[in-house]
Length: 37
Image (cartoon, rainbow, N blue to C red; front, side, top):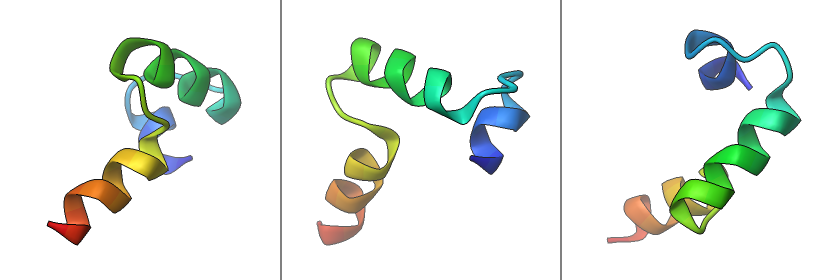
Protein backbone atom coordinates (compact mmCIF):
# COMPACT_ATOMS: atom_id res chain seq x y z
CA UNK A 1 0.00 0.00 0.00
CA UNK A 2 2.94 2.32 0.56
CA UNK A 3 3.78 2.21 -3.15
CA UNK A 4 0.25 3.28 -4.05
CA UNK A 5 0.58 6.41 -1.92
CA UNK A 6 3.95 7.23 -3.50
CA UNK A 7 2.37 7.32 -6.95
CA UNK A 8 -0.60 9.42 -5.87
CA UNK A 9 -3.31 6.89 -4.99
CA UNK A 10 -5.18 7.28 -1.72
CA UNK A 11 -6.88 3.90 -2.10
CA UNK A 12 -4.52 0.89 -2.31
CA UNK A 13 -7.31 -1.33 -3.66
CA UNK A 14 -7.91 1.00 -6.59
CA UNK A 15 -4.18 1.08 -7.33
CA UNK A 16 -4.03 -2.71 -7.28
CA UNK A 17 -7.00 -3.04 -9.64
CA UNK A 18 -5.57 -0.54 -12.13
CA UNK A 19 -2.08 -2.07 -11.90
CA UNK A 20 -3.51 -5.52 -12.64
CA UNK A 21 -5.51 -4.11 -15.54
CA UNK A 22 -2.36 -2.62 -17.07
CA UNK A 23 0.17 -5.36 -16.36
CA UNK A 24 -1.95 -8.51 -16.04
CA UNK A 25 -0.71 -9.23 -12.52
CA UNK A 26 -1.41 -7.74 -9.11
CA UNK A 27 1.55 -5.82 -7.65
CA UNK A 28 2.28 -8.60 -5.13
CA UNK A 29 2.14 -11.26 -7.85
CA UNK A 30 4.63 -9.32 -9.95
CA UNK A 31 6.96 -8.85 -6.99
CA UNK A 32 6.77 -12.56 -6.16
CA UNK A 33 7.53 -13.48 -9.78
CA UNK A 34 10.51 -11.12 -9.88
CA UNK A 35 11.99 -12.35 -6.60
CA UNK A 36 11.70 -16.02 -7.62
CA UNK A 37 13.94 -15.52 -10.64
